[in-house]
Image (cartoon, rainbow, N blue to C red):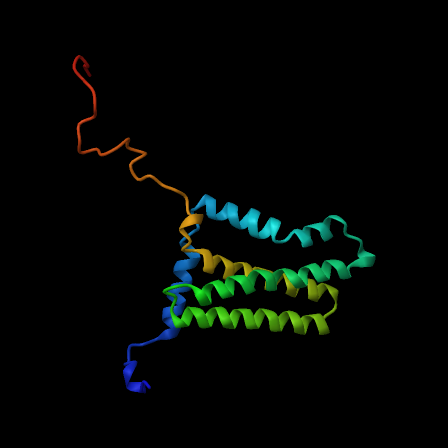
Length: 173
């Protein structure tokens, strides 16, 4: 069992998890493939129940939209949270962040289901969906399959320190 002295005075788990979250939030920002997967795969296809209810919206039957909004965040955050917990090389702080976020989103949704009127219910469900999508983003930020394949030599046509192939005799500038 470790003692308090093993951590030293410079250990700050809050700062460490904050730095990891900031890095994972920024890492995929410029990857078109990542955005495409998230928008199409997670939001469009994953939110199919919400889209269906919005297309067939009838104010008299708003309960079906409320149910769709209730079930989307747990599906996203549950899978993403488990992905972070089981990720090889993840720190304990990142795993605990995932567990806390899953717990908070589920707690908020279940409390909201029982107590809020429709406008506040929909607003809170949307906030929980955004939090769930952020956890998904964090969980998949380092997934190499979702990053754009960038050939670092493509813009220059190859190694600029070597002579180009073929003959260049007879060219004048």
